[in-house]
Length: 123
Image (cartoon, rainbow, N blue to C red):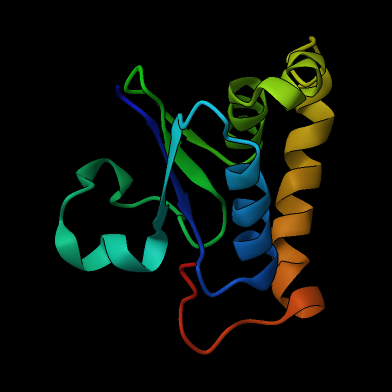
């Protein structure tokens, strides 16, 4: 079965716990998590080249689309049965205009609020 691949910052405590939470609710095992720190050297993910993967969460969907930021969060919510309704609400017209800048603002400040791990955390 093909999975969504989500690229997260493994040195960000907030990102690490978001990943752990989403994994808990991935009952259908649809999501593979890959640390951004592991993508830079392998050359295995050429579609990420030139993208700000440390600043915004990214995803390669099962359908082959690359998403980033708020769009990744929305797609994740739609993929998890318990959160599908929230994902649908996030799909309503106009939500993107508010949620996307809010996501970017939060992402820009996450290290100030939550710190940064010296080494990537994978568990």
